[in-house]
Length: 249
Ligand code: BTN
Image (tube, rainbow, N blue to C red):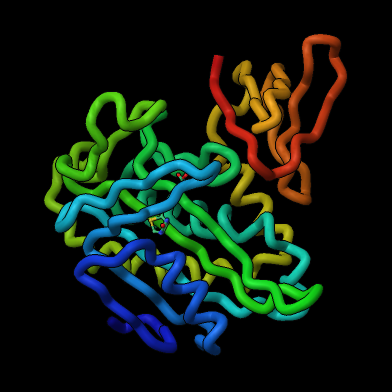
């Protein structure tokens, strides 16, 4: 593939590439090991949502990273690492105006084209592996039907008008992730994330799984990756990454 990966495990059909990658981490998968599937029967999204992967039309993969010591307290940066890498490839190689919907979706013209589910593998008190699971809608058949998702969606081929080679695109993304991961602790990473952030200046509503809600103007992100919201009472609050969802009002 030309990317410095440790090993690749490819499946025509699998439950979830994240599940396989997490098992593999437990069994000792090396840094930069990759699980790829043509289709998933149990694809998972954030907040226990289902993720659909249409065979031949999408990308579904999970990358195993073994964080360096100084990266172990940066768990909240791994999904943005994937999102930033994808945004950069979409901008530079496909001339698409891609943006990151905090914390970790990639949007093109405000429509979701990619979702990321990052999961950590802990040994006692210490994180010893991170799995970045990425699903990308490539061809029109990958777009979920009406009623299957709660947000507007699109796919790369509709946005570019081109036929996309999934494996070329996968290689480009992996190259970009492996470059950016070396800069995870540097200000440039945070700056690039902030620059690619969607909805800055817009009025948004953040909902938590406990039913709590915060509304206000999206200002940007803090250096620890929390979302800065200016509430109607002019108080600024920082919302941490967790089981929260963001809606534009
Ligand atoms: C989301 O938008 O909620 C995140 C979706 C993440 C989907 C990817 S597809 C590859 C990997 N395997 C999974 O089961 N989920 C992630």
